[in-house]
Image: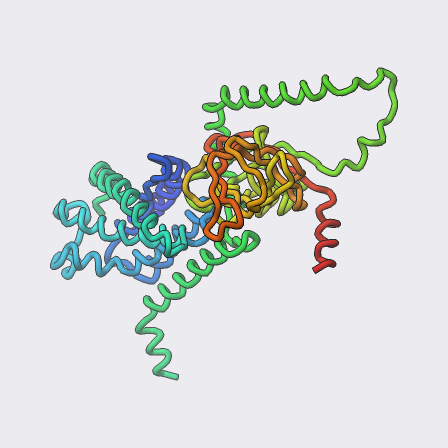
Length: 169
Length: 272
């Protein structure tokens, strides 16, 4: 248990620092940034207490907001995907999830991509909707969502493959 | 009562989610509505310290460019200094040096941002250097933004590349003034609106600050006109301005304190 706790604490801090110091300054083609800090939400243990999980996700989003001076947009987007994660898990993994026997290290690759894609798209859509905060610029929101999502999904998949061996728990 | 408690216990996850979502959306709305109300900001011990540490490493990569900028600035100031009338060599106290209206403080940008629609910069000067809210921030080439929040050692700056900021500016050759706003598209161009139709506007004209607010002195360069057209009602011009500053690479800035700001504010308040 302590091992699991320390893994997630370290992951929380490392993802936060990488996000604010490195990945928010990529600005690929002008303004496209990846937000792979949500890997914390994606890889959080399924069986754990949902209340703590939602609170932690909110805290992570709020810290990102503090560093990036973005109001509360990351907190809102992250807490939303934390809340709807069970639905996404059920949709992507089906029966495996029902039996509570899920381990991200050894699920089917296609299922894993579906799962990451769903949550990343929802997260980024809420994020850019709140950031731009203007319904007349909905095309800008959709454009940003699409490009950033591609970037984030790629990074998330790569990170889960590279560090998959150690993070199987 | 029992039923209410049961209801809360049954839906505790959902209720917590709604509560947290509500809190974060309120924070977002506050940050969009007015610049004084941003509650969570990076001018604090934790994020300021981390950005400071990271900047103390990364500043070396841009050293050459920044040196060149500072040298150009020095050259300009020297040419002003040595072309004015020389003061006699004898010692005397120049009383015009007292009670200067504007006080400049040099600062360094430890976090720059230009890719979102609401960009905020972080400076390494704060309350300890008597930096307060609503001080202007400029670089050697032109205008940068307005100080928003301060803590002991750090200050956040509402960049001109922020859709919520609005700064008064005018044409250099005539006194017609308007307000600078950013439409969020490109970090090189911002928009000037409310210049009346009667003004003569041409491509390449210089735009400077108007000095109508208590924040910026008159005459700080902003940029040159790249494009203009009349608005829908055909009363005012909508002007695109190419900034003199490269907002994507700023390191050394100056914070301007207007010592008469309080007095001006009080007079304006009395008139309202």
